[in-house]
Image (cartoon, rainbow, N blue to C red; front, side):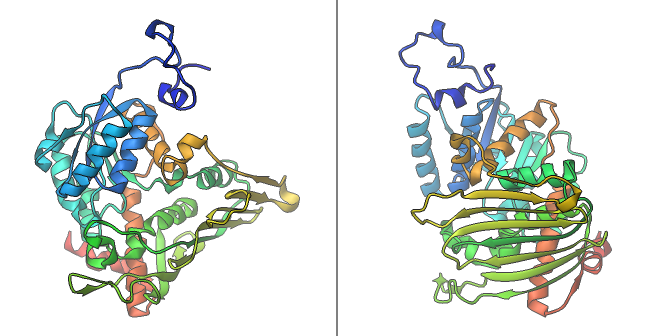
Length: 402
């Protein structure tokens, strides 16, 4: 086995007793790229962690308007990576246009993305923009248009694609065609309520875009990916029933959805559904894909119980059409524990691969846009009680005003 990633090896084995001349697997190499983190909160720290673990890039500096986030992330960085210098930028412009920096990772609150991208894109640097790319169709369209002819990598952080269960589902469904022609898709997310954020921005649709954009764009991206088509009609029910009914921040009550059932019909006839519950006592995701030759089911589960059982599972049943299989998809422990069951690590790995010209399929700005489209249609359907025609929505909101 070659020296693929010395950070990976040194995480498992001790090498302090060796002199530098005796180190090969454990030798220190100079990262080829420098990234700046725009937004130094919890997700910013996750991006720092996986960048440093992946090893081909290093974190050069951070920018954030919140002093507590700057202080906390600076302390985290020095504790985790002693000897590494972390630059603190005083303006967004300085963070975006530092000539020493190769890439920008934008992980600020959703409602700030549009203004930050307007500045970041002037730099010509590689950009990794966290999901959702924007909170409104208008802003998502503007980002899509800005990025259309962008010469550097512009990747959207829809990293759930790289969770073990979905990576294997892509392999089985889209590469091996284990289920044949896909006809229906179902995704479930049951989880605890939204966690606390700086200024509690994720409790208000004005700042997050609403739950079905903020969180569920991941799942709508997966539905779009597996359906291999554009969404045609969206119908949703849902609302705010349990979470944050007694919550107020600066006198404002939360207005986000805590449960929903969403049906999406695609132009190619594929029919899909998404079931959300954000007042469940666990983190549970499930996908079921049915085709004319078989069915795939996969899930991941963290229920906080002291039981020894697999928290990830996948099965492919093909009947008389072929073989069946069950599996426990997973990554090495240090990768899987680095964030989002290892998905963020591979998001970064493919980001760097693409920078180096080794093309990997990652979420494009176009795909990020369509994940917001489905989320916005679902939010509107809940509010109006109507089936949303996606073409009409885009004509009214985007095309007629372009």
